[in-house]
Structure formats: C-alpha cells, structure tokens
Image 1 (cartoon, rainbow, N blue to C red):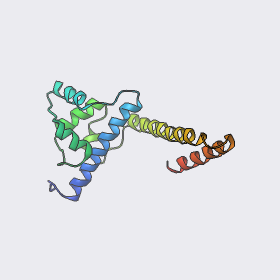
Image 2 (cartoon, helix red, strand yellow; image 1 turned 180 degrees about the horizontal axis):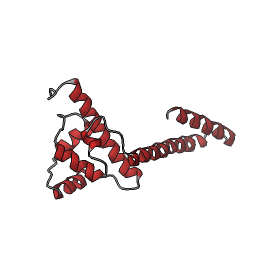
Image 3 (tube, one colour; image 1 turned 30 degrees about the vertical axis):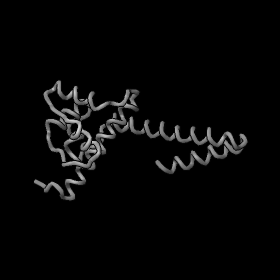
Image 4 (tube, rainbow, N blue to C red; image 1 turned 30 degrees about the horizontal axis):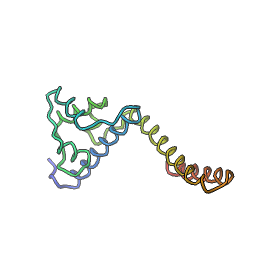
Length: 145
C-alpha cells in the first residue's frame, strides 16, 4: 500500500478530483441541470452507499485523503453512467460519451467567450472592426485547442 502523503497519493487524489469534475461538467453539457450534493447522496443511499458532504467535497476538490473505497467509487461511476474503471483505475481511458460531451462543452464555452467579447466591443467599434476582432478571437480560440 502506498503511503497516504506520497506523491502517488497526491497525484491519484488530483486525478480522481479532475475526473469527478469532468463528470459534473458532462451532465451540464448533455443539457441537464448541475447535480447538487443531495442528488448524488440520495442516489448512492438507495444503493446502500453512504457519502458525507465533507467527503464529497474533498473528493471533488482533491484536497483530502485519497479515497480508495471501491464500493463508493463504483456507485459513483454507476450514478454518472461510466465504467467503474474510470474512477478506480488511474490508467483507464475516458469513456467515448464523456469525451464527446467535453468537446461540445469546450465549443460552447469558446462561443460564449466570443459572444461576450463581441457584444462588449461592438458597442465601441464599427462593424468592420468587429468582424476583424471576431477573426482574431477565432484564431486565438483555435490555438487553445
């Protein structure tokens, strides 16, 4: 067993937190409302799995002890509709559905940035300048892929 504060534990804790946040983002990208802690807690309780608010937040934020409770991780994976290995095996690949939704989410966020910038700048620049700015924004956003 790896020590609690080893670099491995820190890396694994951060990766689990990242994966949980990705799953939370995917729910929104699929058109759902963001899950609240109580939604997750109730669904897990139906399966006989307990999850405290503190544990959920330190799992999601990656700032508590490494969670290795396989029953809990498998129940969370089932709740989010992903293979259990996505949360239990740090070397597992991202499920195709999650990857596709993340790409959609990135596109949506880029479009929000562009829309916001053009609305704000459109009030002070002429139409030609706004078109030029739109091209610059597209180029900058494409470089961030």
